[in-house]
Structures are given as C-alpha cells and as structure tokens.
Image (tube, rainbow, N blue to C red; front, side, top):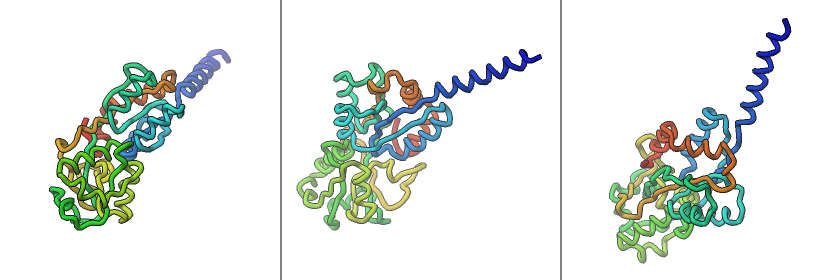
Length: 251
C-alpha cells in the first residue's frame, strides 16, 4: 500500500528540487535610457521563466570600463552598437550572442507644457539659460545630441549653456528639477503608449544624427549561466518587443 503513495511523493519532490535548481539570477548592466522598459520586462521575465534579473543602470562608456576591470555583469544592454562590438572583438563576450534589441530616439524635452515647439525652434531662440545633455564621451544619446547641434549650426551658440549629466538619467533629472529649461533626452524616458507623458517635446528626426542602435550581448561571466541565455532569448520574443515599442523604440 505504501509504495504507490511513495512514488508520486518522490517524483513531486524531484520536480520541486529541479525547479529550484533551474531558476537562476542574472546580473545585467543596462544603459540608463532603457531603465523603464527593462523594469517592466524584468517582471514578466521572472514570472515566465523563474529567473531573476538584477540590473544596474548607467552610461555605456562607464560600463565598458567596469566590465574591463572585472565587474560581475553577465549581460550588457548598451546604448550603442560600437561598445558591444568592441567587447566582442576583445574576447569579453560569448561569440554569436550580440544582437540589436532596440533603436533609440532622441527628443528635445522640457518639463514645462508648451515650452518646446514641434520643430525644436526654441533651440535657436536663445531664451533659455541651460540646455541639458548626457556626457557625449560616455553616453551615445549625448553624442547624438552634439551631432544635432552641429547639424543645426548651434554648437558655438549653446556651448556656454550646456549642462552635462554623467548619463541620460542625470540629463533628464536636470530638466525635471528645473535646473535646465530643456534638454536632449531619450524618448523612452518621457513617452509611453504613443504619447509624451508630460511637458513638451520635439522628437528629433532620425536623419539628424547617427542611428542609435542599441546592442546587447552575453558577457564571458554569463557564459555558463542559463538565466543569461534565457534573458537574451526573452528580449528577442514578442512579449518584450511589445514593451520596447511602447516606450518609443524601433525594432
């Protein structure tokens, strides 16, 4: 009598043990512009796979330095394609794991309603004291902002007014707090489900700067971690794609 009961119990215990063993944590370096989307994706990822995503947010260039210095990141979601390509070339990633997960959009934004016009002519008016951008040396969105200013012939005019954030999150903070009247930020930071969430904005035409192709890859430290591979696969799936598009990115 006891044997038929014991077998299902043993099988159930084995399944529980196996489920616990297969769930893992993945350490992810995430470009600051992708903060809101990855937080939304992380919830679904954990629910759907059992794996947990632990994210750190910052500037792509700073993450490169940290990775080269041995930081424990296993997956890198950059704000450009050149930094992941460099890491790939230098042997710091799992071969064949690099792919473009999003194409970013730059926006000139103000926390004030009606302050930024639909063509961005406010930049030429000179009626502002501070223009916020991310550090162009470490943040691709900052580099794109400088390209736009060059294209408009405004580089010299706005130079005394520039306020640089260490990354795109700090650039946004300067504008949100009122320390800068306007700034170049990532559309994803002020956009959700087809509209600007607050303030006023000029969505910069893509042809005014180099494409902001955002690549991801699995780093060497994540090579043996099933959660790292699972995350990359999940980012390529339809559920993540819907979230990414809802924040104004192209795929």
